[in-house]
Amino acid sequence: MEQMFFVIDSRYRSRRPMIITTNLKLAELKNPPDLAHARIYDRILERCAPLLFAGKNFREENAGATRQAAKDIVNRKHE
View 1 (cartoon, one colour):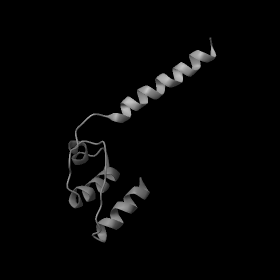
View 2 (cartoon, helix red, strand yellow; view 1 turned 90 degrees about the vertical axis):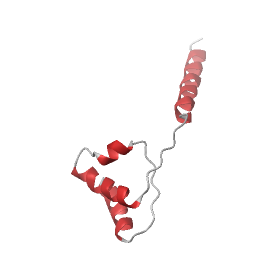
View 3 (tube, helix red, strand yellow; view 1 turned 180 degrees about the vertical axis):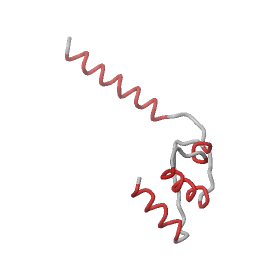
């Protein structure tokens, strides 16, 4: 967490651009769980324009296919 703060804070102080991706919702960024997160999120929200990209979660599909492939391999070894 400390390293994350250092990176965000140094870019914030030098007014350097940031592109940050997250799975957090805007409400979560605006209501951080503790002071450490609040310090980071405040800087991000001041310097970044939030954009919502809604759509299909392809990683979830890939994970399901990977699990199935692993099951198939294990089942073949037990045959």
